[in-house]
Amino acid sequence: GEDVEQSLFLSVREGDSSVINCTYTDSSSTYLYWYKQEPGAGLQLLTYIFSNMDMKQDQRLTVLLNKKDKHLSLRIADTQTGDSAIYFCAESLYSSASKIIFGSGTRLSIRP
Amino acid sequence: DAGITQSPRHKVTETGTPVTLRCHQTENHRYMYWYRQDPGHGLRLIHYSYGVKDTDKGEVSDGYSVSRSKTEDFLLTLESATSSQTSVYFCAISGAEGVTGELFFGEGSRLTVL
Image 1 (cartoon, each protein chain N blue to C red):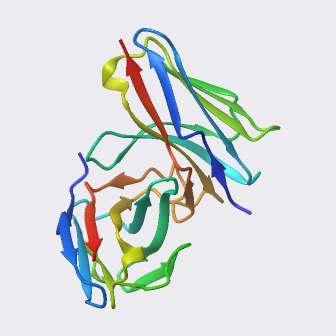
Image 2 (tube, rainbow over the protein chains, first blue to last red):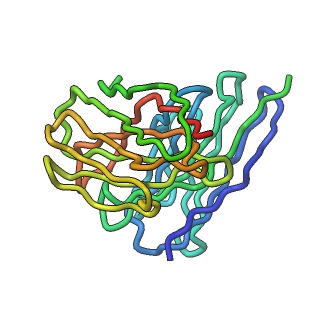
């Protein structure tokens, strides 16, 4: 079946790295995504990785994909207060925009 | 920002009444979606559309219907609202089928059913 799981909360100190983890069940996933939701707003795409890649880096963001274990992670370096948000992991099946499954979201809070 | 407008942004209604939420886009994108967001459940797909008059069910479609008579508008209707449909509803659009499948989201419509 299709399922995407992530922990609900993460608290990190400002300036430290944040690592948000996600597991998915469908091995036919083609793209995996990280979306960010700020309070009172819709989701915005942060980054994505194609399933034949192991890693993708984009400024402070690093995405790691372990396809064998069906594990995806998002690392945010030098976490800032503006990074406080809910982060959603999502997978796209069959290269189809009509079949994107979201996790429950991880709320990242930053402490001084 | 993608041109997506949801209306109303907030609505309080009573059990048994009909409710229609509207999503309007100015991007001429082919695909439009309705999701609901509930604590601990993330986003769950209700219905989606892949063209005018072409719609299909998502994972939580019971109690909901949709219509798309124009490219720019996608309506979500609750024929007889129930308290379990209290939620935040998000419309999303996508124009890149077969590529990255990136979704662009509206700002959400908060519905409370008393």
